[in-house]
Amino acid sequence: MKRKTFLFFIAIAGSLFASSQNIVQQASPGFDSLRLDILHGKIDTIAYESRTVGTIRKALIYTPPGYSKNKKYPVLYLLHGIGGDEKEWLNGGKPQVILDNLYAEKSIEPMIVVMPNGRAMKDDRAGGNIFDTAKVRAFATFESDLLNDLIPFIEQKYPVLTDREHRAIAGLSMGGGQSLNFGLGNPEKFAWVGGFSSAPNTRKPEELIPDPEATSKNLKLLWISCGDQDGLISFSKRTHDYLTEKNIAHIYYIEPGAHDFKVWKNDLYMFSRLLFKPVDPSTFPK
Image (cartoon, rainbow, N blue to C red):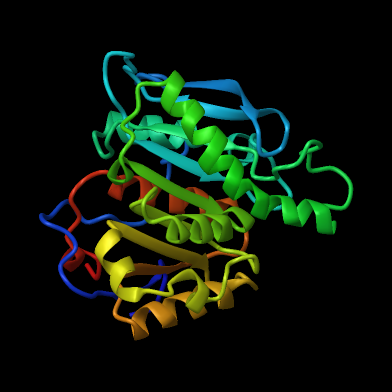
């Protein structure tokens, strides 16, 4: 049978998940098309004080259909790539359309999605030389901005659940590397971690996971995916290989495509369907 849709690899260690759910498969055509016959969530711009950077920074926030201030929500922090900013997902991936459609199908848990600017510096725009040393360094600085400034702001201003089991982080390319670095580096903050086509900023596996036993114990879900034509796939594969060697449960998902939003939109579709609900690893190979 030809590999028309995807290659799927899964490494499993222990029993991290309690009960089963529907099998999550690659998105069908139309998953990212605007539907006028359903309820829609809302996209807003927020501004928060960053003591890390010493300025006011902006982010986008998506609240789901039927959002109520009287309900508590889990949160997904969704990060962009080296050439983007807080609007990259909005402009390139239309996450609100994907998520609205999933809500209409009752396929995902209600959640708030925060799309920050992961370039933590005073001039955080993506213009000029995006590979400038200072700009690249700012993506690492964002770890402090996220943990010490943005997350506390969200938890103060929005009705969100504040425990690690209800906080996820994922991103594309540079943001995928950030998500693995920050998510695995701060297990007390994140139980759900996803790296989509993660870039060379991804720390070496031995640095990402110095204590495999603790990582296995703390994670609810670790998702690593990449397009099969992506020149950066080696960074995802080396992480997967290490996780397999150390028997750390994770999904390693290789799909048709290159380094683009065709891949990343599908990643968001699949990853979001797994979040904040019981997951049964035995369903993954199916």
